[in-house]
Image (cartoon, rainbow, N blue to C red; front, side, top):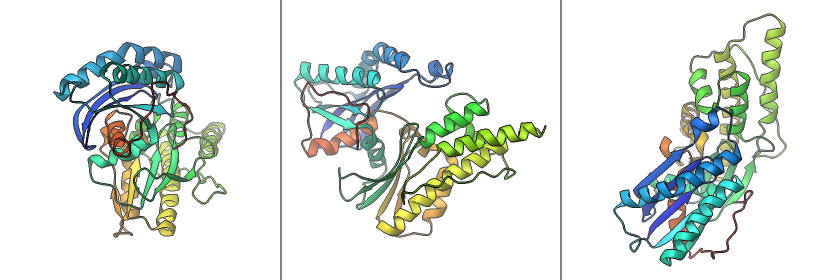
Length: 332
């Protein structure tokens, strides 16, 4: 049981949170950069780093103030050490090290993906063995956990992450960035007028989305060649149904083979409304397995999830020195 100040800066969110006992959020502050990157159609790493520099002190000070805790009461400082954009990671890394050095606190390095998984602890304790479907703009992974902090990646994307595919398809349809919420909303008005083939992969639990994105490009080009009107909502519907059903099918296969007690959704794409419906429908066939989906505000990047993961790391005495280096491609 600890009070942990956590910092997250892996991409385009500058975030700080104070967490007590791993599941009580005393404060959670997030400064988003979406409006800035929307102009460019995606995250520009150099701009993201600069904005982290501008926001980090403000965000940390606000999180401490809203928590009603002093630095003397905080037991440790946690930060995202990777994976992510290296320039963005450096800012959070440096801020955390500065606080740890100044106040003589232990420093906890947290894998960003583990943070997404442990965001589920805000709803319920994870039951083991557990299966986590981690889906975001940078990650698409199936992770099997025999116990706390035991991570085995049994499946992953061979190319694009599912969130990245959403962004690319959104650009094809002229919807702008970020693509996930826009396609999810548009697909609600769509009908099954177009067909897209589900990409095939060799790995039993692996994924592929690059070919699906290409299929959308080809579909739109073919419709235009035939002098027909592209029905954007129907294209969005076809893409979303194909992409999400591939996720659900692989997840179900892992449930059948590995027999977990708990299935967890994690990452930004876990906020997708259609995926939540499809997962609930599939999981209804397995009443002995618990399904947990974190609240939407804890699906996207935030520091509260880093604090939740850090509670487990703290109990296992997983600390680092002040010379710890960020790793943009850190494995789980």
